[in-house]
Length: 196
Image (cartoon, rainbow, N blue to C red; front, side, top):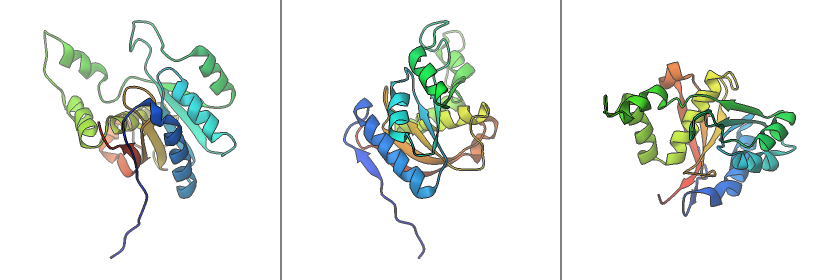
């Protein structure tokens, strides 16, 4: 029998309190696997800041994926302009793009006129329920980053998502573009919340 034994960390509860530990675990696994890029979801910029601070001097690239403009309020970007400027000055790529697992389809599923779930909604819900909400976020961020050209689709990345705010799910993903979704591979779970 041939196998590889790896450590998975389970957080006692989901959410923001795990962000610093998630950053440490992401960096450790990136170094172990010689992965060159960490992709992290960040709405306000706070999570991006934690990862940036943890990764200083590591030589590993940080790609931050934020909510699209208008996600919470029409015409508004939720990301802190101050944090964005600081990160971009340091060479961090910040990507905003339409949510790959909802986007236009969410408008249909929320509509009283059309209603009903979509296949994209089903994929998103399966990722949330089978593993963790953060896995759905991490997968979606990788799709968005690949579609925007911020990452390639050949080399694995560390992808990080969370539940509501902060980071609590860390995984290793071989990226794909949204149009080639079924080529994406979640290869390892590094950390996730045990209880939802």
